[in-house]
Length: 254
Ligand SMILES: Nc1ncnc2c1ncn2[C@@H]1O[C@H](COP(=O)(O)OP(=O)(O)OP(=O)(O)O)[C@@H](O)[C@H]1O
Image (cartoon, rainbow, N blue to C red; front, side, top):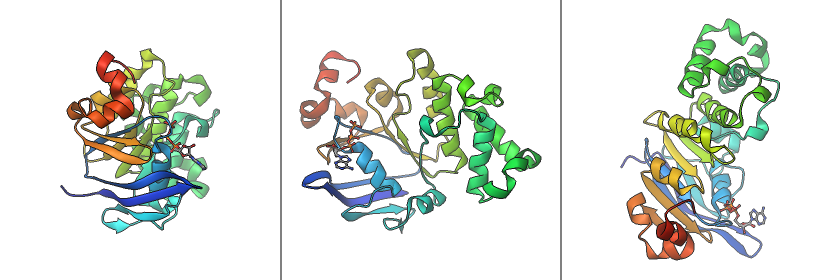
């Protein structure tokens, strides 16, 4: 496979606790991978190490063949290593259109001087519309964030990540907290992401994971205990013991 993103022998300790234990993982453009594991397995720590929000004790992170381990988070973003925003970072009184325009201008390093005038830049407006349309938010372009449903706010998080031109996208529980009636929209949005984008999704909802992912990586106590197909993961003895036993036996959300 042509490797786009790779972590090699990543390690992180907090005091005496090994939270990331020699983790290695490679992804190609277009990969759809789910990272799952019990609470406290080290999934969020792993994402923080990848994005540059935490420094590993040892090991390496590569994007497009470049070793980005020592780069700050903002520089990794410039290279296309993007994690989805959090709803808590949205501005309640700004519209989806303004949010996406601001993200595009940030990417283009014009946020400071251009923001008040973005609507006069046709190329920015075209891109804003395309992104909002892809995520099913176009009808809501001019509403304020506080006026739109929570599920739509989570879609806006993905829209903002898309505005930063990701090559590798990390999604942290994209459907968490979203009512059942709105999760279909999130799934449609995930399915409409560009085919060459590599996506790593963390989620606890196994139904969503199995519909989205073509490959599943299981983390337990900081160690990768499985890396393979969704079909095989439910049959794997170590995974059943560490995490999925209930799901495999009963069928349902772990
Ligand atoms: N800054 C920190 N200092 C000390 N210990 C930490 C720190 N961050 C996380 N931990 C510990 O590291 C372990 C892994 O935490 P992490 O949040 O990465 O797990 P997780 O798999 O994302 O869990 P969850 O599914 O509950 O979000 C936990 O035992 C946690 O208490």
